[in-house]
Length: 498
Image 1 (cartoon, rainbow, N blue to C red):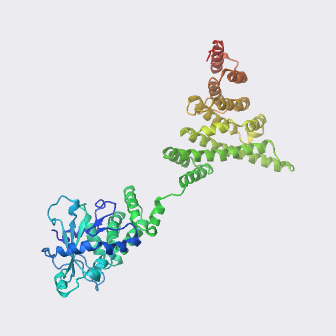
Image 2: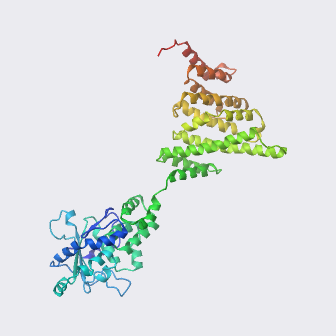
């Protein structure tokens, strides 16, 4: 049997790994899961403890010296574990039902000399020490003094120390609460014990502390395991930290993307958000967010080009020119955003919707052809054709490589609508790839690869439009030669019956 003085150093700061996070059980039984139910059940569950305590009254208890473990701040209160003035003897014993011990009392048991006036601060002891359980005649009263109680403790490391810490707080003021409950681990350790004993002040202080401090991932798991033991009012602030609302992740992710693409000079931030997208666990949510951002950005580009090619303003020439310049700049800025979004969608293999939208743009591609045949854009947004061709090249390459799988009709429409834009840009501008190779050459090769995947009649129609890919030197367009040779080889093959 241990003297509690040997535990004095550890009792204030219990081992954070000592107690399980589910409901603890005292000798009187389990505490209920809700705060408003704890007091009701305490009174009903104390009969067994009281009888067990009285049966242990004949056992000779080890008595610590009169020197108390802890001196309370309030001199009017008795001292914790003071044998001279104690009117309650409390034994903390390892639960025999949960251990391999065959003896009635383990040598690890701890005996504490306490005071009913302090113990009544928690509802469990208040009920246990109430008149209902006191001896009814004078002889029993004499034999029962001091009052003896036995509490069974789970055989977990630090379980007894945690209970001593909570019992010590019955003698403490606010300063002692603050010095004892000073880490998240300590609060997590003491909270289930306070819930068992219905020590509401300690429960409130533990919850208040946990709500205000950061948690490690392990501590968060333990807090969540304790939440069912708390009332709704006690747990709401803890749950608010870890429980999201519907679609909160998607809204957060969309807000990050919107913030990034609408702020200039944010390359390092874009790289960070791209990493978040790659590591985002819910792929479907990431897909919906990217599609939403893609559609809204693409809409701005299309509307800007439509306003540029079909201006609705009549009047002052300078005003009209300023509006036209604004339309081109808006298209250019959002075109860059669109390229970044396309790259992210391809990276995550969620670009099917983007490919379909890009392939259904006869009006938009017609506006681009009209714009790029004129020279007005050259001194305003010289990089606009390159940005839009890069979007087309990224999506087309993903199709040709099999990264994105779409129907043959979608592939045909993509080439059909964007091939005229490529031809116009080839004649008027020559943006380069990172390898200093003309971008139009890469896009020509990619379009020809896609054409090779189409039915013969569709491939015949599109290949005829690709004659403009030819050059003065026959050796400079091997991709075009290979495409036509492939088509003629297939055309020469006898029809295959099905």
